[in-house]
Length: 196
Image 1: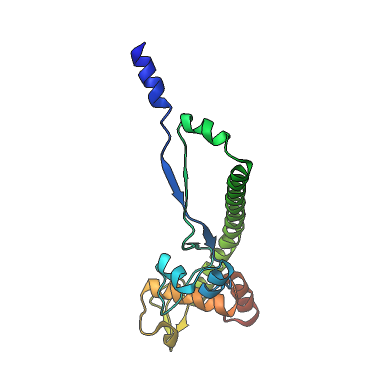
Image 2: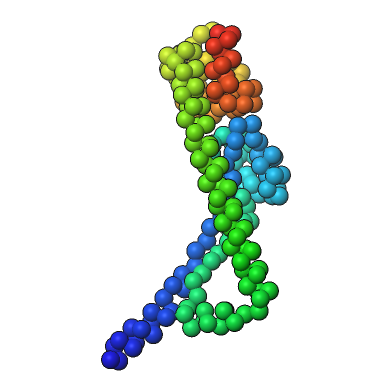
């Protein structure tokens, strides 16, 4: 009986583990570091630091999820003995707790909806990107045509002497996002004009 009582008492205090989560935002086509930072009330510098974004290029990618600085929230399950006390707390405190929980649920739902729409647009953008790469170079990072270099046949001035696959991908994404807004729009332009 003593063993069961000890186990029962111990179980009252299980669950005091804290969990931390941070708010995130998914970049959409046409977004910039400044636009995301301003829309979420954070500084550009803080946004870049928390996401390890170079302050010299400010390069972000559509479809990529970024963490918002200073938005970590901690939740902890309370021991059963304390829960009785919490239930007797003033209505104002319970209301504030409910509002915080509702706000967190709303943020999570919005993030899930954004992620779902981004996945759909990302798959069509990925298909358009692959289509353009095939038309431009047959998908080869080493293809050259005069001043145009690599998988996406970008001007050597855009690549700044770095012809690595990673740089070609980053520069191509930045070029298409800034000029057309999406790879799908760039593909439509290519189909109409024979170039992008």
